[in-house]
Image (cartoon, rainbow, N blue to C red; front, top):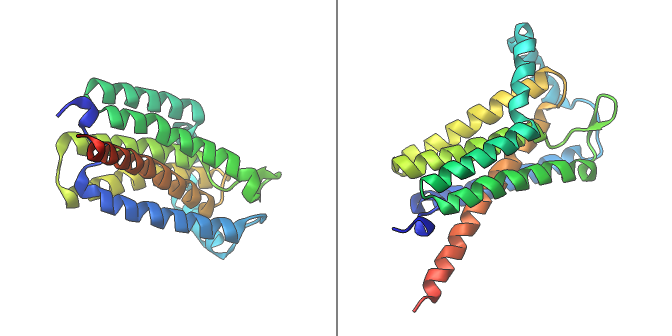
Length: 217
């Protein structure tokens, strides 16, 4: 199989990925509708923050350092590195996902903040969390690359993608909540944005490739 023909998303993972995109989009929309134009902690956020504070109170400085892994410069650098690795390994479609997925996630989490209008602290826009979205988008691309190389099968492949995304997004999201930069539901919104846009990009590329094959003589 030529490099251009290697899929960004294995066939056995496309239906689960589509389900993930739909679920993430729905959750994002519900949260945006619920917290748009709001400020302050809701009931869910209040309980979640209490748990985070109890678990992380003694590790504030470490968590503050961890938040850098979701910062735009590091996300851009990681996306470029992953793109280069994908190209070297002959995964051209996945190289496109490595750039477009995190890029769209960054744009969405940045541009949607003032539109949704949820604020925190001194009035800064909070929903969705760009740091959480950025870290999750990079983790998803890395997980897809791992699955592409190892080809572990449907169940293990799904588990790998889910676990890697949750660990990365959960870690950065927890750190952002612990330092008071975001409400917990902001981090869920950032996570959902990354899932929808990274997996959506991969699915779109596969759909285009399928259509091109169908048109070939």
